[in-house]
Length: 169
Image (cartoon, rainbow, N blue to C red; front, side):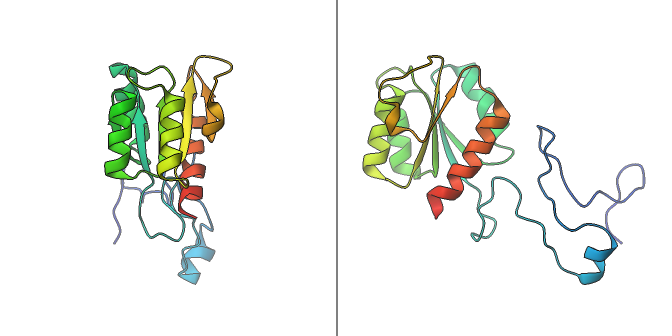
């Protein structure tokens, strides 16, 4: 017998992200059970064709509360490392080789667009998401996506998922 929920019911054949989006979808019900085939796509944050390897994200944010909150939200779907400023972010990038860098623009030591440029010089396949409170940011051409503050976590998560897949293919 499979596992049961506390109410004695079997668990649903899918999971939900913290944002309410299904993590697994596909053929459900008696047809899927009868065929014995799992046609569900991999959970969001996992790379297609790469087994169960999670997308690696480097989050560079100097505000401690924002960094901790964003990291906690992203960790449910991705493998997240953090850095507190642009220079630490570049060192972490060189050590960890993440698929996607999510960086604030206003950072001590090195701004986010400069970090993006250095990341692209070192690894052109890496993807960069710039987060900024400004409507236009000089140097943003080095970034793959620019998101305005306040951050919509669902949009950020979707961008990380898409860019992480692109970085590997």
